[in-house]
Image (spheres, rainbow over the protein chains, first blue to last red):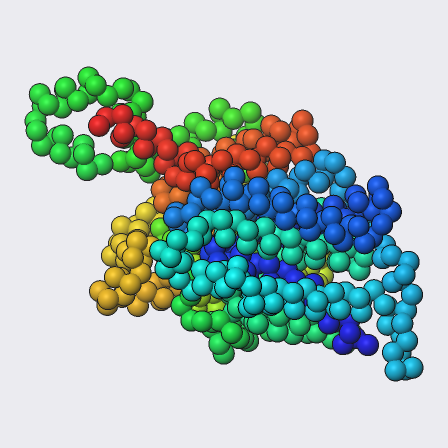
Length: 285
Length: 341
C-alpha cells in the first residue's frame, strides 16, 4: 500500500526531474524556475477547472500554457545569456521564480486553493481483494508511464529526437551540419516547461496548491537529478522512483524523518558515486 | 588600477593633464577602489546618521557581513552556493542557545556561532566540494534544506516553527566592566567592531599567498592544479572561511533580534544573500555592503506600501543578471575607467 503511495510521489519526481534533465542535457541551463512553473501548472489547472469544471481539459490546457510560457521565457530572457558563464541562466531563473511566486500571491492570495480529483477517479480501488487504493494515484502512475513512453519514442524514433540527442552530445557538430540549434533549444525548453506544467496539474489533487508549493518540490527534484546523474533520463526515472519510495516508506515508520531521508540517500550516493547513478563524470562542471 | 600606475610614472605634468579630464566622481571611485577598507570604515562611522533609523543601519551591516563571507565563496573562489542560510542559521542558533543555556557571555556566544558556522561548512563542504559548477549550487541548496528540516523538527533545541525566543540581553563585559549595548547606536558600533575585524581578517587572507591561489582557482582551476595546488582543498578551505564568517553574521543577527526564526535556515535566506552579493557586485569588499544596503533599503521602503515587495526586487535582480552582471559597484567602476579611455 505504502509502496504505491511512494510510487505515485516518485512519478511526480520523475516528471519534474525529466523536465529539468532534458533542459539541462541540451541547454546546460539549470532551470531554477522549474518549481515555480510546476506551481503555475497547478494554478493554471485550478483556473481551468474553476471556469469549465473539467479536470481533463485542465490536464490539456495547463501544459500548453506553461509550455508556451517556457518558450517565451527562453526566447526573451535565457537566450541572451548563452555563451556567458553557466551560472547566469541559473541566477536569472532564480530571480524569475520570485516574480512568478509574487504574481500568484497578488492574484490568488497566499491561501490554499481547492483542487479535487475528478469524480470518476476519486473512489478507492480494490486491488487483489486485499487492500484499497485511491484510483487517482493509480491514474497518476499510469499517465506518467505513458508520458515517459511517449517521450522515449519521441527521442529515440523521430528525426527531431535524433537531432536533440545529437545536440546533447556535440552541439557544435550538429550546428556544422546546418541545423539551427537555437530553435531546438527553444523547443526543448518548451517541452521541459510543459512537463513541469503537467506535473503541477497531476500533483494538485494529492498535494495542496499554494504559491510556495514549488519550492520544496524544486529542491527535492534537484536531489533526484543529482542522484540520478544530471542529463540522464534513465537516471531521472530510476532515482525519482527510489526517492518517492524512500520518502513514503519513512513516513510510515518514522514520520519525523520523512523530509530528511532523501537528503541522506543523496549524501550516501554522493559518497559512493560522486557523479550519480547514471551520470558521466565531469559533465559540464 | 594599473592604468593609473602607468599615468603616475609619466610625472607631474602628465598627471595634471589627466586630472583635468577626469571628473571628480571618477577620481573618487578610483580612490575608493584603491583603498576600500579605509573608505568603508569612514563611511560606516557616518552611516548610522544618514539612514532613516539606526536599526536599519545595523541590519545592513550584519547582512553586509554575511554577504562579505558569502563573497569569499562566490566572488573570490567562483563557487555559486545556494546554501549559505545553513551557516548563517547555525551561527544564529548556536549563539542563541549558548546564551540561553550555557554561559551568558556575548564574546563566547559569538565565538561559538563563528566556530559552528565553520564546522558545519567543513562537514557539508566535504560533500559539496566533490561536485562543481551547477552541481555545487544544487548540493549546497539541498544540504541547507536538510538542516532546515532538522531545525524544524528538533523542537526541544530550536523551538521549531516558533523559533528560538527570549535570548537574554546580556551586557557586554570588557576588562571587568559591563556595558549595556542595547541602544540602537551602541549596538551598531558593537556590530561594526566585528564587521571591521572581519574585513581586516578577510583582507589579510586574500592578500596572502592562499588568497591568490583562491583567485587562481576561480580563474582557471586546471591551471592552478597543474601549478601544483590541491584545488579541491583550497576550495574547501575557502568554503569553511565563508561559512565561519556567515556564522558570525548569524550570531550577531541573533543578538540583534533577541530571537532566531526558523526562516533563518530556510533557502530564502540563501537566496537573499545571493541577490545582495550580485546586486552589489561580487569580488570586491564594497559590493556586498552596497548590495545589502540597496536590498534592505528597498525592502524597508516598499514593505510599508505593499506586502508583495518582491515583485519589484525580482525584476531588478533579473535585469541586473541580464545587463549588469558586475553589479552596482562593478558597473560604477567600469563606467569610470571606460570614460577615461
